[in-house]
Image (cartoon, rainbow, N blue to C red; front, side, top):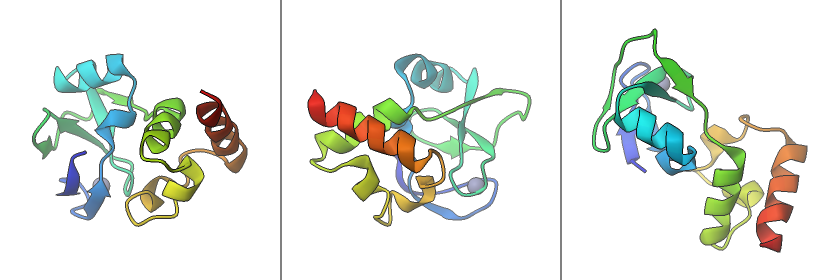
Length: 112
Ligand SMILES: [Zn+2]
């Protein structure tokens, strides 16, 4: 989430921003305006208040989506992260992590 929302910097439609892939502290910091969420298409930092994706001060810290959160999330959708990254919604994130990293996170999520 949020789904189907335009990036205010590159103006491209992001199928899913995957805010929930940030660790809890980063989620709180993004909501509070202390950190920025990264556009998966242009890699610019944007603000997110839980509702709107907005342009923000470029000096803020960029929060990185967390591989383990992503693998865990994919598992909750009955998918591996590797398979999810082949979907339209997942594809923008395919370069965020290496094949090996994704494979090991999937194995760990499956073992839970
Ligand atoms: Zn963008």
